[in-house]
Length: 222
Image (cartoon, rainbow, N blue to C red):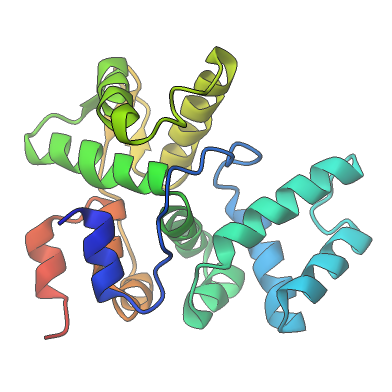
């Protein structure tokens, strides 16, 4: 069973992954913008009303209406996968916890990002190889391309943008530190509050934070 399938079988709130969504390059992690969108949703209690308020007030401080529309849509799609408790953390928690929840939202909404972290990065850490190399990323793309033809349809510039934004997200989430090649892989420190918010949904999402399977299994409710 794949990780995505395992998560769908364990979690009440996880999304249905139907393919690789590669249109996420409108923004990297940007937890400060995720906070604004989460705050507006919690105040409005409705995503459409929150959208109207965000755009009418230029809450995301964009220079153009088109940019505001793209950003609001991207963050709404990500945050819409979160539970109520996770949304509250996105809006009200410390900067470190907000970054973790912003990455959780990415994991839950962007299969491409989640599987890269949960497979490629976790496997390298498990083999005591913390250096992320360009060849690791290319091997991931090559491995996924047969079952995800949308990867092959990307232009060269789009491929470069997807890689750039994904690597930036990983750095913002604390999974990738500056180092040799593309960076040094590291397991981010999660506060007990964030761990509870994740495990009450499904501990399987901890794979996106490079938590080993044995530890994930120990947190699963029988």
